[in-house]
Image 1 (cartoon, one colour):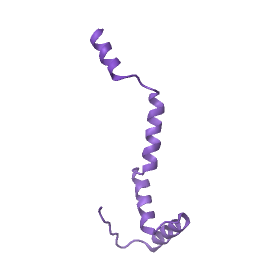
Image 2 (image 1 turned 135 degrees about the vertical axis):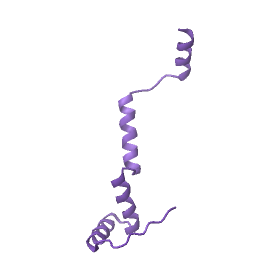
Image 3 (image 1 turned 90 degrees about the vertical axis):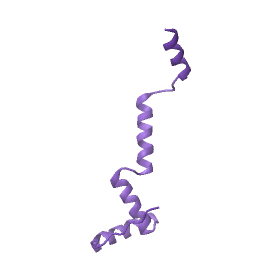
Image 4 (image 1 turned 90 degrees about the horizontal axis):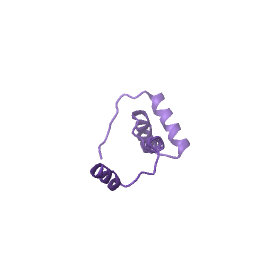
Length: 75
């Protein structure tokens, strides 16, 4: 796993992050990861919500792919 070091971070940012971590019962480093994931759109929760949205848009359930192949082959 990669490491990230941030220099010269405004103390107000650190304090806000510390408060947010305290409220959620997280360590400050864990909360920083959550904030970065949310900001960059790579959070697990966001990915799950997006997958659910796509699933709902597509409808379903889908038939067997064998049916599609058979239909293409047999006309």
